[in-house]
Length: 247
Ligand SMILES: C[S@@+](CC[C@H](N)C(=O)[O-])C[C@H]1O[C@@H](n2cnc3c(N)ncnc32)[C@H](O)[C@@H]1O
Image (tube, rainbow, N blue to C red):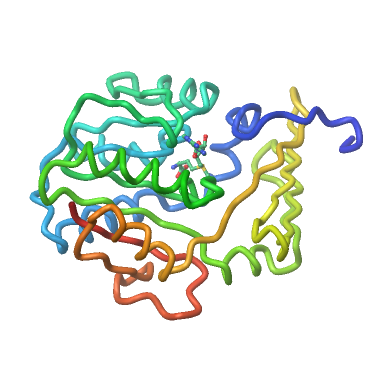
């Protein structure tokens, strides 16, 4: 391990090479099932096309593809998309920033998984993303996503550190929360036989009140804040919430 000499890479660039190893214990299949079930409970008709916002390496895209739904993935990281395209050649993957999405297609369901939305650090960026989602949704279409809350980001990896091995990949991720800026910072060091790098990521917490206010500004209706698993109303101290809203 030679952390001192690590390359500082931009967010979600070199991480693409080791992302799937590090996420190998994440149950994307369960999340996929939860998203589809929850969308149906909120009136989704069950047909595509659907859009995976912040699809990364395609792990969150796969459950929809496997069920025969037409699914499109969107992400700003060329490196993450490169992995996704190799994994799922028939799927359309679009490189775009959440803040500037232009897709000439109507979706019945737009979803986002695993903190992708927390990467939007100010209200205006969230509003730009959500306004594009609103435009892309068909009437009564569903927007469904997860976000870390303030409690979640303050308590992430309680000790402030997550360290270990994922297959051949050594990782040592340090987490801190800056009460002045209200942002969480993750310094993610990763190393395998070929590479040795750190990426610094920032996340902004989104609590129920803020999310509800921002979505209402854009005329989303039937906004629910849910817990996972189970899908009932999220408790006040939930570290991560799932948000469902309808156009
Ligand atoms: C933690 S990963 C989640 C990836 C995937 N959904 C999963 O569950 O494995 C967050 C993803 O959001 C993408 N992302 C972050 N900010 C973005 C932005 N402003 N525009 C587009 N994609 C963004 C990153 O490139 C990354 O692939």
